[in-house]
Image 1 (tube, rainbow, N blue to C red):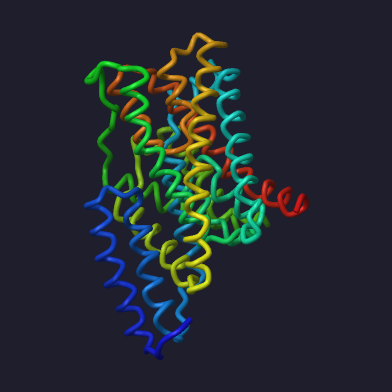
Image 2 (image 1 turned 120 degrees about the horizontal axis):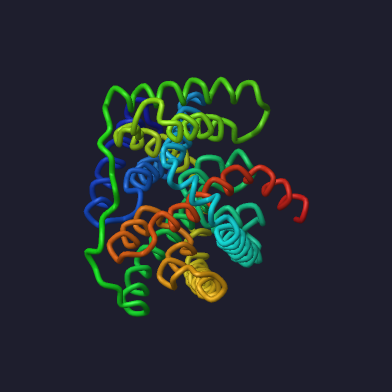
Length: 350
């Protein structure tokens, strides 16, 4: 840290003002998760210009983790679960293959002296970027590196996916749209409250590092799939609160040395991500060759990130959106559940 002292109020003002302005700019530029990245810059603006320590309450970070888990759990529905059962063999091939490729990419990044195996793999694991970022520090990874690299991965996937789809498959457009059900505000808030309170209580009972995320995720997935409250979702403003808390927490830990280190590794990261995108596309081609799944659906099912963009393209181009959703969602859930075991294995292998 460098710079002068600030009062807590002035420090918080710097974080909020810079974060809001950065968030608005990122939203205009269509950067993935603009609220999270804006909050990171808000935290950095204080951390790199003042010696005054500033930290968020521990409980706020656990609530933010819980909200991220609930957001993921709300995606689970009956149609997706049925597809996971009926096409389990090919979906498992997609999930395992993509996870192994992304772990290999992370190990390549970890060849750098300034990146540990845990940080390298967490930074490039393909699925659940917000969830991985939320638990990275607890599991021994450098959450600053993980945040920047994870969302750079998502950005590159989002940029290349429409180009590959259009040039390689030339699908017609306008075949369909995503079925988005209207939800009730009262049902959404009840869903969040039940999942958050129950999930955090579960986290207190089970001594698992990432349970603040997994507990609410498990309860929200059960409630959403059962349909007890009808169609439900996490209100957008609550998702923004979660991303803002996580982003500020990460941003406050930056210093000049860490920023310079991340800047030096970005060219290598871009090359590794493009390699990962090409490798998963090859996996999609293998899936289309081995199974009745069509080539476009296979490609979209294996893309390493960008869940909602993938589903939008699948629906618009007439691909099997339910199959794509099943493969992408199962990979996301598997990764979030396996992160503690993966971190333990990586520490031992190091």
